[in-house]
Length: 120
Image (cartoon, rainbow, N blue to C red; front, top):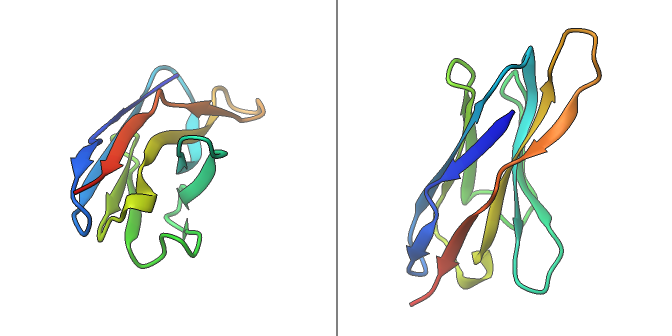
């Protein structure tokens, strides 16, 4: 299973970016998908999650500014980020809980990360 992120880059404070993450490979099902981020010198933190049924969850730090969505037919998850500020600067990682074969336990997979820099 491979997760490939795209959409990172440099944006000014108050701007917007949309991240995408596409899963490929052989698997039975993708359960929860999510986005995490890691700023320099800090631990990786949760940004948003979305279940296979579309239930979303966000920490207070991004609630109201970030929106996670997914296209199950394309095995892709998106993160729309609005009103970005300098504290959002980080490497953003895609995560997916994947069931490779029916009846097997699911396991997490990670993308390689995409850098988001918010700066004037």
